[in-house]
Length: 149
Image (cartoon, rainbow, N blue to C red; front, side):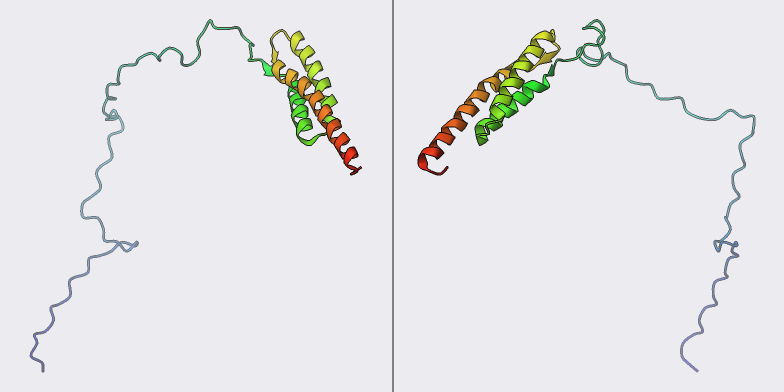
């Protein structure tokens, strides 16, 4: 025999439910009566409401319905692009295109009664177009004189 005392008996196992958890120790609270009003607290008082500062949101009385900001004329943009690219890469065809697009764009802008803008771009294209042609002729002349062509 041993000198140690016998182990204590095991704790009794509480009964379990089919899910494996022990049953609740207290019964569930009873459901509220059907005719009782719902219990809730009134909403907290809200902060005072202030009107938005001026300049935000829609303001009546300004402008008229259907007004839109003037848009850039597409030919004015094309004229400016043709003029810049024609000067940069010495393209002979882009210079005359810049002039034609620019002149047509100026005419359309003048007839649009303020609904189109871009006159400055069109004028820049009209100016850069001849510069591109002159630069092309200078480069061609220098290539001919050097014997490269």
